[in-house]
Image (tube, rainbow, N blue to C red; front, side):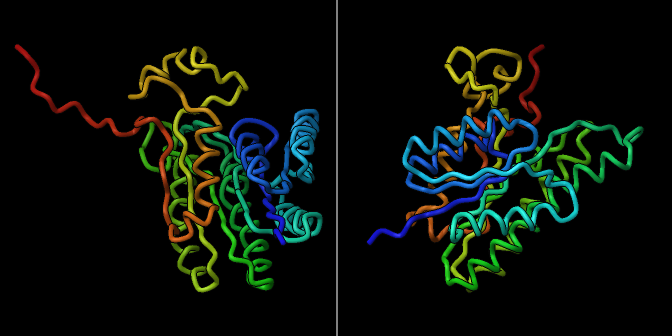
Length: 257
């Protein structure tokens, strides 16, 4: 008898989250996911997943609000019946100068990009432990948490905090055979045009050693691997998916006269 696999993904109505939801549905997972404002996109994704003969639930969730992350995770577990995989992806990127940043911006980015991840994890990990589920937890981080950029003191440092958090979480949950890892995308297209021509367009693409931006499928493929039995010995890691973008350092070659 095959036991149905389940996954809950935050922020999956478009972009990277959508790519992850589709890949896991293709792999046989029933899916629950959140969206922020794009209900039409959420309905379209649900229809695609249901066409794969997988169950799919979605919820509007403002995860920066005080009790939403815990509540929606509990609802996803209730609808799915159990939870094998949590993927925390919801977030907002923003470049901000410390010279004029507003406190409300700091609070919003912290609550959405960091606090909600921990609270979803609290609910999911307690459920997994209670039901003896050898689950997987994945945080979608960013290479901006590994490399410093100008005007990136808030978002970049929060992603760095996620990378550090998975290490402690991996240690704490190892006794329960729950793995915790982070995936760190670099420059990634999220506009649904993932042709080779589109991915190679623009200044950002010229900065990537592989000469293209990433696509959601690049991240989704790694997530699918990290939650598989083949990766059951990998935990506490942050893995870049950036085409080599942040490998560049200062050019130390001597200049020609």
